Length: 183
Length: 319
Image (cartoon, rainbow over all chains, first blue to last red; front, side, top):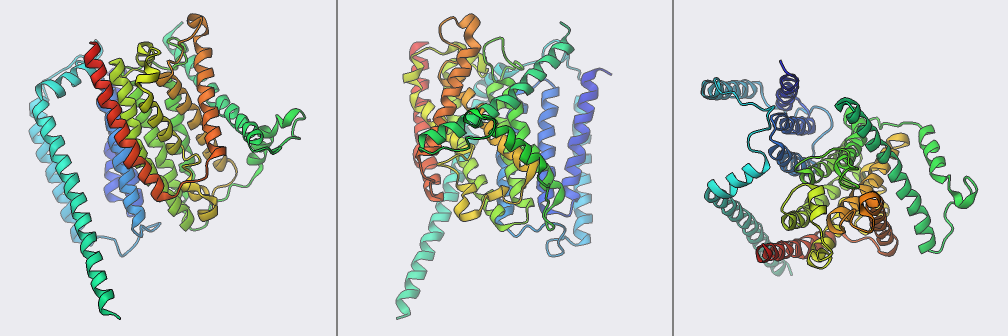
């Protein structure tokens, strides 16, 4: 056991525990906050494994942007303080959710563990890769998938924009029609 | 020196800077605001020009009762000031005053600063939601909308200087800086300064804490030391943003005798930027929410994208 092993085990345990809390807590906003802890400590896992850039981007994108958006969306609803019967799921749904989650975990573990069980990487002699290697991989080997993904996201963005615009215009027209009828 | 001892010394030095520089900015704000608006401000505490006013404020905050509203979510409510404050401490630890005077060196330090500044907003959101107060909730929502909008132009402006220097390390960017950048990176610098003001929720971007509409936004229910922590987070934010601006866009320690006076140049440049931020506070009225969003999406994002293209062209032409 090296220091790195101990730190990795501790950070990993916090990640798993907060992920579990995030799906089991009965407070909606607490769930989002535990998700935040889980995603943040996952960034810590990457840092311990020597992948500085991946960890920091995880922090920037997931903690700094996505969870903020989740919290913002929750604030637009009537997210109550404390547990609330109205938004509680029935027991059978919880059981099915637990079974599905466990099944996915077992499936992934059965697939990934044999694949990487014998592989060892020496992290103390400088992490393999690092920032320049990731840049070369993303903009060299994987440049086409990367660009395709960004085009896909752009299309989704324009689509969302168009949908919101079209709906707004239709509502305007219908409200205009209604106001014409009224007098 | 053993590595552990060195780490402790560096951590203590960063903590000392974190506790002293925001107070210096706060005192400057008192005095600069008073002079710019032609009013006295607090003049009695301590004798000479009221120098001890901040100490008196601190004593007052410590003495006040720590109130938690009855319907609030206690745990989240109590934790929020720490979540707002600590990211700035982490950010300050990687901002260099000179190549040697820096808390911790890191390959992708500029990404770290942007990432932890994004985490700081979570504290405001937690405060806004957990207070169980409608004003707080509205303020929290305004803060979230504002920060999500202004984070994008800020990241793009920083990406521009990182591209120009060819590195993500703050020390590397400052070392690649040359006086030409003042012209070449000027649009990016403008975008960064405006976005930094908006991220700090300073006037004219203080819609989330607009006192005439929503009392004090997310911080309405806070009192005593917890409120003081939010204030400290704001001033620590000014320090972090000013130093970052000085290092990324003004060359940091570049100046006469930079080998042994470099840290002083960085501090002076950062201080000048902080005074500009105070200056903006006293000279502009508050912007409306829709004006805020329009400024970010219609002006800052396109300017930042143009700057990025300009930088790319410059880098390709000169390489």
